[in-house]
Length: 75
Image 1: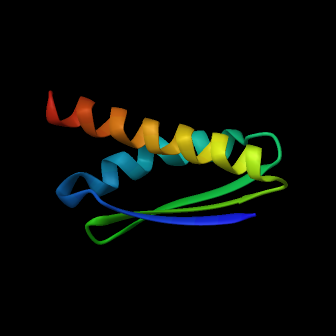
Image 2 (image 1 turned 45 degrees about the vertical axis):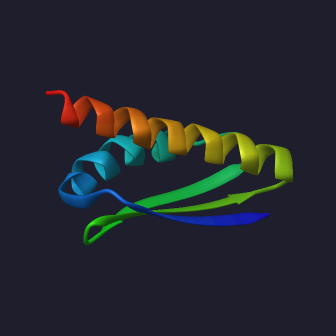
């Protein structure tokens, strides 16, 4: 199972990517994740052994991206 996400994160893209890259490096069971900034978009590629793992990882990374953006905006 695979998912690709492209989020418009504007000028905060690099900072958000740096926060999520650490989570991707730690590894998730049954899931491979790649995160990188691409201009003003954050790219996330996920590949999982099963749909449940893919959904859980996708929910986690979207939530972490939302949280990182909130921290940056409220600094």
